[in-house]
Length: 437
Ligand code: SAH
Image 1 (cartoon, protein in one colour):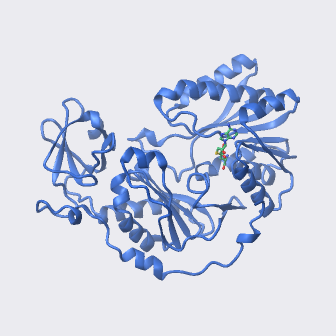
Image 2: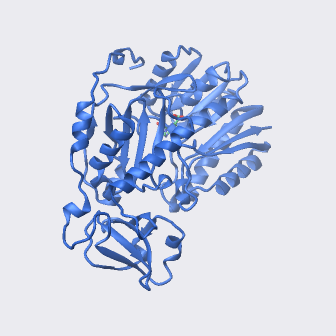
Image 3: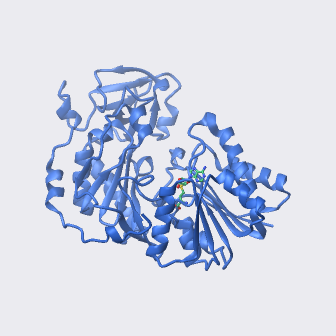
């Protein structure tokens, strides 16, 4: 690859296919399992908690684990609406049931009178979209996360907007069952040209979902979708790219990091499609940027994006971060700024210690490459690694390298990835900007 020229052709306008797709009926619980007369959106069964397990759910945490459940009263099939009740039979919340998942019930409303129906989904989608409008993330040529699961009151649904297209992930079986309805509502609210469904492999397995290859509604993008961010243009591959095509969560961090570049030499380690590097060059006046990634495909995206923006002082190197950082140190290379944005190192709580050791390792090597007074931009997207753990890891790096590390900014994901105060699992990204003396 290396160029997007082949993809720069006019798109076929489409509206009818979207509205046809919109008219398809959803798999609603009431339609799929009419066992007992219950108003649409209300529960046919109750999930009763074990004694002493109710507190987090009165506290509006949306995940009911199998270990908290005593029994189901009435008949519930997977995807059905259920009421969550305490061991004393008191109503707590209403949610969607999945016997195949450890996450037995996901909660969507704590209001006894509120139906869990298409109108609720519409209100949540509307509110989520309104937030992005308020944030100024509604540039029609831009990209943003429109819906972020629990943080937008829609556990199991992620929707990203790339210009006129949407890329969607269903990480809950009950949401997957309702996708046609959700797409119909989204098409009324934001009129996308097309919607692409991206599968999250882990979720498919954990939720017992059917494997769905290449599902889409409306027009399928014929190549990368081009988007603007901070005056830079990128091609995002919605069908094959990482996540839904772009690391939208790093949007503000990419721009802020550039403010610390001050014309110096930059290392963008784990560069993917080059977002940090391009900002460092365009907005930070970097003398030159070395972009490293283990994936050839990622580097061709970064190269194509550099070309698209007419930026010539980016250099590319395929390699494993651990080895490349060591090789650069051995070659006595020095940088004014090192950016570390690795993939998720801890996939479970049990993996946290190993992950911290890996973070320590790369951060230690990165610090060794920094000139005195250099800037370290260091990230972790492992939700299981807490902010405090990350600071402790940095303290260890400072001690072992005998370099002072001054934390200047402790940042998170951009605000189109809000953190729910009652579901702290929605906080996962950490981005620390540090001066290394
Ligand atoms: N900073 C990027 C996102 C980085 S995602 C942005 O703003 O868009 C993490 C990247 O790390 C992925 O591109 C992945 O290919 C790469 N990666 C994974 N393991 C790696 C390793 N051991 N060494 C180098 N790169 C690696």
